[in-house]
Image (tube, rainbow, N blue to C red; front, side):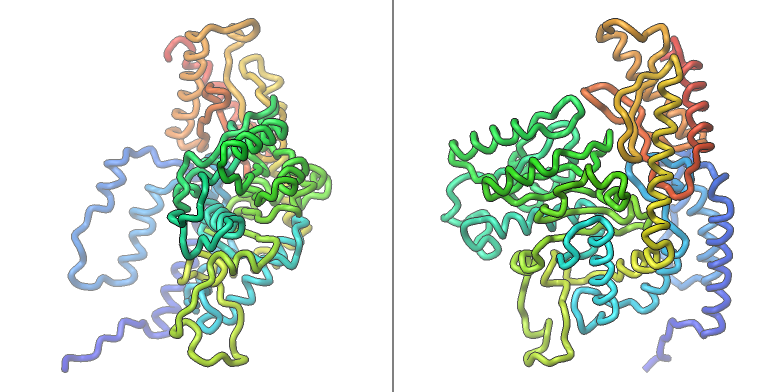
Length: 496
């Protein structure tokens, strides 16, 4: 037999490399406020940096770590920058980085109790803390997921399997007992695309999502919701769920939660609250009125890797009655629990969600909540909201920008509209030129490395959209980015 291969390092070597790695991370955090937010490199240039043959022989750990500074950082988008305002991406806090290393070291599989007793209890406790913080029933069930997409999929699967008139886990959509098409409802403008993707994944199809007309503030119209449900019932369809937006993707709108909850109760529908972007705002006492009725939701999704600043990846789903999750996902096999039950067993998370193998995501959330506390988080959430409001004030005061809405949370959309094009009715040619100007502003801003800002669309028109969910952003960052956007817009007049 050949010599036994043992790839583990000695404790001394691991400690040396660990110290080097921590130094690299510390240097990164030290420079994060000054780094170009986005690499000015084409996709081909980035791809070329990683062209390498499959290694035949192992390489030294030091040379592998060298690639961090030589290849990874120069081609990275720095979501932790205070001027990263794209999508809805959180900033990643330092203790979360340490938590990730610790979780990886122990490498527990939080699918079952026996491979992860401590991790299971940390997750259960952290889910309870989150529920308490936002005013959701603390005795709820729930778990951490990869993100809002999987959280919504988990919630909608539970909704289907708990409202269908037959055993859907066993028969699925092919049951002869199904008498019509399943239907779920969300607002037409601000409803998130992940709901359609989740409908696709459950097998009911994207067309099962019924868009409900929105009011002027882009929130769902409860009257239109009622009419849609009544129409589907009359047609023999199977309404089963309504999705309320709790902090929408473009304008941070919160749907009329209590009215939606009343309608769901009246028709016996599952009420799902999609709070991936905004549910954590309920932690703020001054905002709690907007969230009244959220505690009535059968399920609620929210993303710690967004507005809790947890490093990727970490979404979450809460379900008011834990048994409904178990009913939707529970499975049984002798090799999962052993053949004879003992007192040395606990909750198995594979009974409560779609994953069997699960990482220790809860540790970073648990550690961050312990470090910041509820009071610390409230300060950070308020700062983000204040930054969005500060941008709104700059937009209002400028003759070259157009207000689209009042900021509600940390998400804010607006348009660059030159003073000479404001006022009166604009034709399609003028609107298209404004669309191109706004896209040009965001493109040039990204490529400059100064900031990362994306466009979106509201009522079909291109808008500049910022998401301020970084714990590092200050009003000074907002001033800097606004001035740069204004300058780019003026410089491009007549050149779009």
